[in-house]
Length: 82
Image 1 (spheres, rainbow, N blue to C red):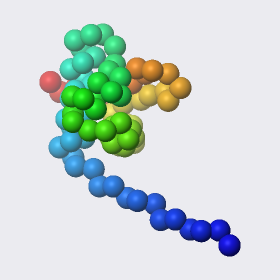
Image 2 (image 1 turned 90 degrees about the vertical axis):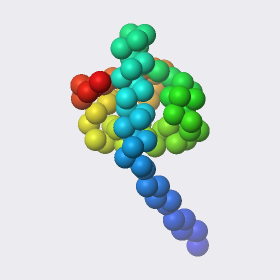
Image 3 (image 1 turned 60 degrees about the vertical axis):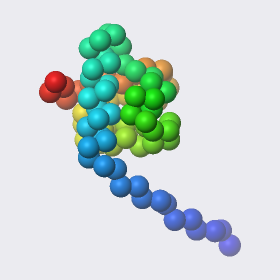
């Protein structure tokens, strides 16, 4: 009989979601291309799996778009406020 595993549900802090988004906006404006996952993680003090979750959240909100097959493929859809 197959073992059923529960999916962990992680609650993401809205402040941290906004922090990740603002970092992406700032970095994109400064350098002309999107940051890497490592750069986002270093700037926001989080591990790469957490960065994935926050990017998934931003994508679900319609604020960014990305291609998982390409590096630095984050595209800002919702204009940055700062």
